[in-house]
Length: 166
Image (cartoon, rainbow, N blue to C red; front, side, top):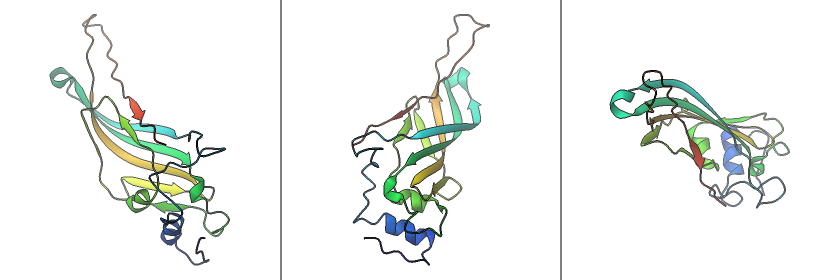
């Protein structure tokens, strides 16, 4: 049972919604009709910096803003806190909720940039729709194809993958 009152802050509401008694962040949200259905995670990637040292290392560096959008019905608060239209948070909110496990598979190294509000932003609407924004810095491998040198065209992929978790 949720302990809700009309004067709760966003942080207090999120802590109540993710209380260990009712929420397990290690278990993915249930699907649309039952808990075994897949969860749909919509993803966007905004590349805002590309640096290349291709001639020497066959690698390039990128800075990316990743955005994930998915429904977690366990975080629905429209009926218990109608006075709130959104819950916003940074790393603190991120650490409380389930988030998808996504990685870049053609990378020898990467790092989440920083740990503050400017690097991780979580927004949850009253229906439980979660939008997670995070910045990523990665060094990616890119093999050159020089069969038509000097008229060749290089394509360097950015390959995202995810672990399937039950």
